Length: 239
Image (cartoon, rainbow, N blue to C red; front, side):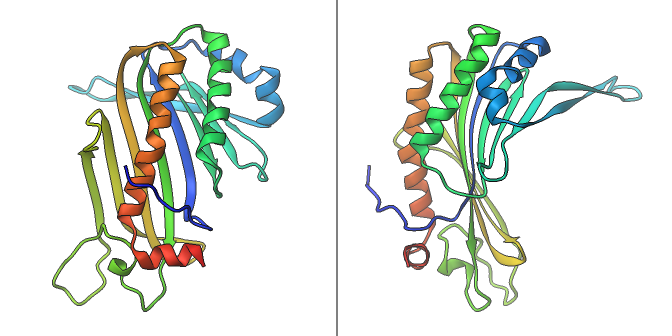
């Protein structure tokens, strides 16, 4: 696998590590998790998350809303979020970059905190997602900044959305979802580059195996990212 020179600055706006599991965790377990000292001390804002159930689809649909877990947030200086739900657990870093290794270590710590309340969990899916925003100047074309874009014969600037879904060639067990689309941030126009890596597992309970597989995503997301941007974009973030 090709090695890449790290950028001095990065376009990363959000990083998400996620684990899904087979068990339907009892809400009482999640209540214990949010009360753990190491969780409660860091994540000072807690709110419930909700799930909508639709029934009687063949007649008159009936909807019911129930709590499926919690959303935990740190203060604005830390910009971290945990979503602890009955069937999934995710860890988010928003608004700024932090190293993969550091975030993965924290994610594992809080995952073990969750398991101290739930017992062993059978993991069915792991994923890592990187959301990037590349600012675009008025006179710049999309193909000057990214290699994944919509090519068309029209003279106008089309608001195109490209979604590529494929198995990573060097490891077919990893599914890549790559999205390139026009977007904006704080009134700035640009391109959203969304890289989402997934791997299905068969009821895996060994944490060492689980986190080694998540760590394998590190080089894959780097390769996908650098293949998706141009030399001009690299220069932008290295200046």
